[in-house]
Each structure stands twice: as C-alpha cells, then as structure tokens.
Image (tube, protein in one colour):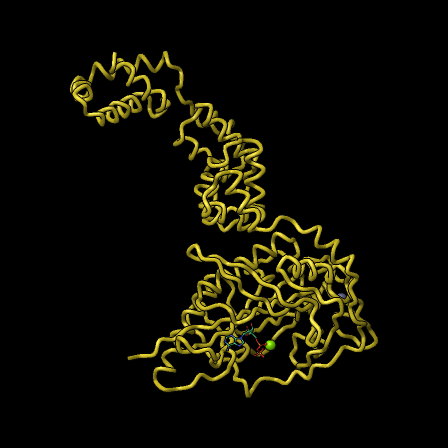
Length: 482
Ligand code: ADP
Ligand code: ZN
Ligand code: MG
C-alpha cells in the first residue's frame, strides 16, 4: 500500500509598514513615483551617511506584535545581512537576526467550524530592497536592467510562523487572518497586489504518524491568496511523486509560475549565500520602555475575532456572515455605520453579503474606493422598507448607485420607479384580475392555495411590476375570503 503523507507548512510573511517616511531616513515611503525620486544619500548607501531609527516603525512593529499575541522583547538590535545584488545599494540589508523585536505569538484560524492556533516564532524589523526592471521578460534574457531605489529602506516586518499548518487551506486561512488583523491595527495597507503583503511558503511532507519533519522547499512569487493555495497544492503533489518513486526532496527555493501553474527550482541550498550576519555598528539597540508598550496595547482596536463575536451576539448575524463582514475592517465599519442609520442588522448584512460584495469583487474594488456609502445604502433600504420601491427595484437602484454614486431617491425618480402601495388603487386592479380569472378563484377556494401566486403575478403584470407584492397578497386573500 502506498504511504499516506501529511504536509507541514510554515510561512514567512513580509509586511510593509505604513509609516510616512523610510526606516532610517526621511524619504517618503509613498508607493510608485518616478524612479529614484524617493531617495537620498542615506537610503542610497553613500559613504558618510548614518541611519537614524524611525520611531513610528518601532511602534508599528510592537503594535503588530501585540495584536498577534507576541511577547515584546525589551531589548532588540539590528544586524547586517550581507549579499551583493543591485537592488541593495549598501550590499547589506539591515535586519534583526540575533535579537528580533517580537517573539512567541499566535494566530487563531477556523476551518470547518474547528479552531486552531498557528504559532508565530518571531517578528523582526528590517528594511526593504529596491526594485529591478529588466529590459527583457526575464533577467537572463535581458540586455540590461534598471534599478529603482524608491522602495529601498521602506520599513518591513517579517512574521515567521512555526511549521504548524497541515494543508494549503490552513495556510491560506492563516494568511487571511494575519492580513485582517494587520489591517485592523492600521500598521500596513496589506495589499498583496501592490506588494505591501508578501509571503514565502515553506513546505515538506512526512508519512502520517511520523513526528519528524521532512526536507522542506521554500516557494516564492505568490501574489494572491489563491496562488498561495495553488502553489502549495502543486508542491504537495510534486513532492509526493518524488517520494513515491523512492527519491529524496532537495532543500531548495522554488518559484511559483502563475500562468503555468507550476513551481520550478530557483536555487538549491548549496547555492544559498552565507549572509555573514553581524550586528550593525551604526545603530544602537532598541530598548523599550514597558510603559510605552502598555500605551500601545491600550490603543489597539477591537480585533476581527472579537468583532465577529459581537456581531453574532448583538446583531444576530450567523457565524458565517459575521466572519465575512469582519474579515476586513473597512467592511466591518461600513456595516456598523449603516446599522446606526438603518437599524435592521440582518437586512444590512444580507445586502452587503449579496449585492455589495458581488459588485465589489466583480470590479476589483475596495470598500474605500466604492461610491456606495453607509448613508446611501441606508437611504435605499429605507425606501424599500417604506414600500416606496420593491425588492426587485431596490436591486436595480443599488446597481445604479454602485456605478454612479447617485442618491437612491434621485435614481428612483430618474427611472420613474414607483411602487404602488396605495390600497385603493390596487383594490381596483385586484377586482379586475379576480373577475378575469374565475378558474383560479375557484381553484383557490377549493383549497389550492398555490393559485394565489398566479393571481399575484397577474396583478404585477397589470401594474408593470410596480405593485407592492405584499399588499397585493393581503388584498387578494381578503377578497377571496369574502
Ligand atoms: P531556514 O533556516 O531555512 O530559514 P527556519 O527554521 O528559519 O528555516 O524556518 C523558516 C520557515 O520554514 C519557518 O516559517 C518555519 O516554520 C518553516 N519550516 C521549518 N522547517 C520546516 C519543515 N521541515 N517543513 C515545513 N516548514 C518548515
Ligand atoms: Zn532616503
Ligand atoms: Mg530562517
């Protein structure tokens, strides 16, 4: 019988901190910009310049660590990671190797109703590298490359998990939870597409029941949650094939190719550089005042899990809905603000989970980029609740609101949408429909309750869909029982 294998996965996640200026100089950290316009002699590594620690970067690293249940090291220090590559002007990256700023945290994930803690080994502060732009499609096929140092020295934290994940789904759930928590704390934009959240995945297989770890590979180049999951699924199959054929896994770094859907070897352990880490002599250690750490802890916002529990308990939302609404802070705040204006949490949740998320996803937009505001959604829901428009019309209005940002009331007027809720006007039409359909009336009176659906449909047809179906229903029942 073939051996059954279990996957062992650990993630290394890089997060760009949302400080205004770089980690050791006063250049802007703004994304984009013309190449080499966000640079100075300091971040370009000119001789004679000295790094000066950005206090905000330290604060954000501590903030992230506290939100991720880490212990904060009162003493941490910077080290130089030496390697030569043109994206690194100094030929060393300032990082924290021997004494990272945070240690021993965890993130709780939930899959299929089961909760699991994924431990965090450490979080360290470091500087980002610049970016290379190759003249061809890859470095090997290029005549030349251009270097842009705008990103060089932007502050990063690296969050290193323990190898606690056992499936691609768990790895994805961990990264999603990590992203949500970091977004709530406000330390980063956490945008995978723009590179402010980047993830390397370490993965190995071992026979089920074994307590030792197998040899791991490290996968790079995944820039969405979906690619992370796909890359890990691919790598599990690949490693399993190697092992089943009696081969051994080579410890190496592999790149994920999104188009081909495969990983391929980038470099093996033998080719790995020795980084010759040593303490950076230009930077003093970071010694933290416990009172300052306390202040930061006290300023943490309500985090996703707590918020989810609150929506379940106080608003009566299902675990599933509450989980999705609290998966991002902007979505959760949108919900809270809408509920203040239109106090039917379940209705608000249904609209957000249905129409709103559907359109946001289809357009690839964030809540903050959308023209829909809590005020406008609440106004729309009120029009529906007051019987001024039907549920069907509300969906049309919402789509228009989403696309144009116009006030729901204006859209209703422009489209000439009016729902007839006037009982007198509807009664006349109901009588007309009853007179024209004696068979359905007889069916209903003979106990076929379904016949009423047909009659409602006829009234809707007569009114070109503008009748309030609830009122039509009531009127029909009343007339039929007279
Ligand atoms: P390295 O020395 O290669 O950088 P580390 O021990 O620092 O390895 O771990 C790097 C990452 O790899 C961590 O996230 C860790 O959880 C994960 N990891 C370590 N060993 C394994 C393994 N055998 N299988 C899968 N992941 C692993
Ligand atoms: Zn600079
Ligand atoms: Mg390591």
